[in-house]
Image (cartoon, rainbow, N blue to C red; front, side):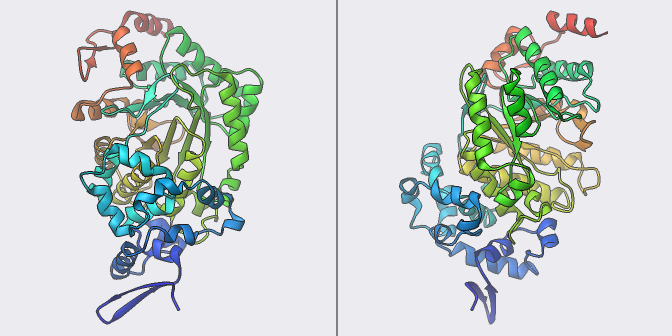
Length: 463
């Protein structure tokens, strides 16, 4: 007999277990079709959503979607669950939870109070029965603030990761892109580089160069080389000026094993970074990236849909108090998110679920060139996420990452979102932009009409 079912007229739709119910209730995406877990048609999807809406939230504590005994992410979710924080919503069904989240009395303070009591599966479940506007409205109410040298996530702020990747890690090319980004007010979340040559000496070289730039111009931001966590630990042991530790993470133990990590290794890396005491306004030292489809691509999804797997990655992130987390939403490719519509929906889901769980969530608003998407789709997602209170987005020269070969958001795109919605950079970074005469005016500052003298000299030196 099926564990769950829903009857529509004379037709009875069975769902064999909680994994099956969650998967069948998920809005259509190519990755779930590839995995063979998607609903057969729209009717079955609606039936699953209706059955899910009637499910008590407490069910997710009683029926783990991945066995407790065989998965350390499940053990983390269950063992760290805060029953006192859960108490105000314990009596709700998934549908009631949606209504509660959308209700006017529920504000940022209440959402922050219940966040430790919400499991990733609860967040994923309620997202599956919400419209895009619901995801935006609730995420906007969530307020998650973190800090290192700049403060991320304050109300009416939108930060950016300045991403100056170079196909050969040429330091002059990286420096030129950093300068370009700073002159457009980008980089308050992090100056973060994906190294083309990924080894410890190269990590030390790049992070040392970035630190020299930050120290010379007294920029209130942090640097990060997006290398494997073990490389960063070795770089710290060699005395490198590491600000943030980066790692890609996923929602199952097996998927994380495919990345060469586990929870103990992440804890070790956080302790190493904290020991350097390089933060000035806070001590959030971790930077995580996620993305729907990563567990499936490693054959480590345990029969779950990709969005539920993704939400479980946020439990891993939450345990290590990160400065930054972002979903690289369209990067893996159309096998997992086929077109602009699916990418937009996934980006809103990821942002909502992470914020609901108490994470400082950003998004790499992006797509690969073989996806059925274009820059107009990215404009839509960027605008929606900025309206939803997204913590940060990417800043890439011309929207085109010439090292990773994918399309994302540019320095100009971040300026557009800030001007459209009255958003500002992190306060420490904004003060620096004013002091360096990169921005001028009050409120949502405009770019200065003339190139600031220190950077004019830097450009002449490069020439």
